[in-house]
Image 1 (cartoon, rainbow, N blue to C red):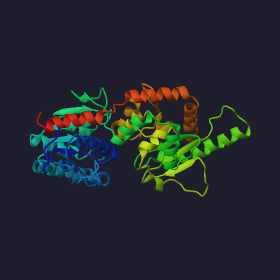
Image 2: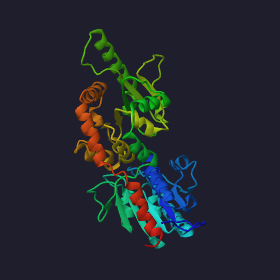
Image 3: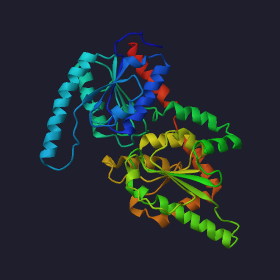
Amino acid sequence: MSTEEGNSVSVLIAGGGTGGHIMPALAVCNALVKKGIPETSIEFLGSKNGQEAKLLEGTKFKLNALDSRPLNRKLNLQLLYAVITMIKSIFVGIRLVKNINPKVVVSVGGFASVPGAIGAKVNSIPLVVINLDKGPGLAIKLASFFSTEILDGFEGTSLRDSKFVGIPIRSEIVDAVDKKARLTSTEVEQIKKQLKLPLEGYIVVLMGGSLGAKAINDLGKDLAIKFNEEYLKSIKHEVTNSIGIVNIVHLAGSRGINEVESSEEVVSNYILRGFESNMELLYLVSDLVVCRAGASTVAEILAMGVPSVLIPLPNAPRNHQYLNALTYSKVNACLLIEQKVLNLEFLYAKISELLTDQSRLKEISQKAKEMSKIKASEEIAECIIGYVNGN
């Protein structure tokens, strides 16, 4: 079903701040567009200091940005200023929601989701809340009190009366999942050439998110050197059961790549990049992914059936990344490593164990695919369209 063409806003997406909130929201928006909602009928209510403006570039989705300040836990002037900013933004948000007058407000978490949710309640507009983490954030918990419907990315969260739908993922990933089932060795080689990756050996992707993760980034090159040294030793001593060539594709993040120590030493099995714009292609040729446990990234990895080692961010609010990873590791859909035990030798050993145990890799891959909800974006879009059409 589709909404009528025109300038009126059908859907207002409230929230964002980080890619972990915005990318799933964009996945839902794209699903809405495919189902007939015009791009110009979808707007965002976000923050001026977040990644919204950057990630919405190239789309027709209008951004209405609010002032925001981080809420730290220390009683100081910064906290007072942040609280005052939040209160002001709530009133601005209420006015914006009234002026925009959408058919439905969709809260995805993050700073702006609170003014959006309160604005929806005050203006008697249906509010759909999308929770993206096993441990719901404070903004989502607040929004849930005003919600018309709660759509949950995980089963068994603390949100009452929520409906489990899974984490929305990009259409490019959905298309790649279908492609992976029919992928030939020739196509794999072509993709590696397109991505400028080595044609021989395993492809292990090491990444810490859009900005990077220092604890992971610090190990990237040394890990590649370690695997290279062990491979050369196996050749010298004619070891028949060695792992073979292990290539480390290190995506250090747009900010993190500037923090990675550079040297003139060239390591043949080490590929360092800030980011990869064709992640769906990289997933197709990856044997293993080592990364943080943000819900959006993990959802893509699960959908693609790529075995993964998840290293949750230890100081994430409510320890939500650990809870995300724990949910999947309990059913053997990934391997969970806590950062407090992370070092070069430990990570090398764990990756080696996995790469030398193909049956376990296959089991993790299968469990990952079983845990994935690949139709989540479509299901969420159908729910939202119901409110757009007044159902």
